[in-house]
Length: 189
Image (cartoon, rainbow, N blue to C red):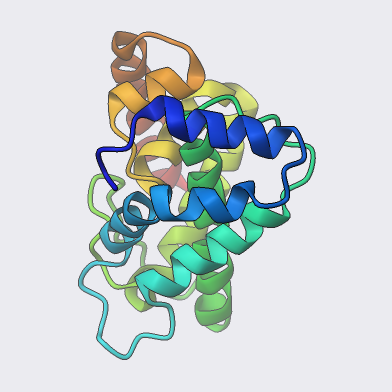
């Protein structure tokens, strides 16, 4: 199913826009593997009996996507961008549940290039990143979206560029600036 043309996925998304109730069910087989890949990347090195597994993350994200109202799906990349945001929110909710009691007590060890640290270890760090991303969004919304799509969604530079309708070079520059900004924000908070 990975060889499905982007145009076919875009057509299903347009059907969804038009109110076709079965569109999200038709879409799932085409996007499931990619969403699962993104979830596995986010959840790598978690213990086997972790309460949040990649499959659960994908299912929760897709359930939330199916309930989305008022989204005008543009194309495949736009879909994955929204999925990135939802996966981010799910992970943040999970981190809040597991890290609330220790908030502010643990030292933050976190790199936005390394998403393989177990969630229990980085629960506080995910919340710190979330807060920093919210501040970045106030300064530069596009940079915040790029970080979100890349970090939480695992999208490539070309997929992010397509989703945001900007050049790949702009994505690379914005990613570099955003990483520096976030590093400064996380270290000084």
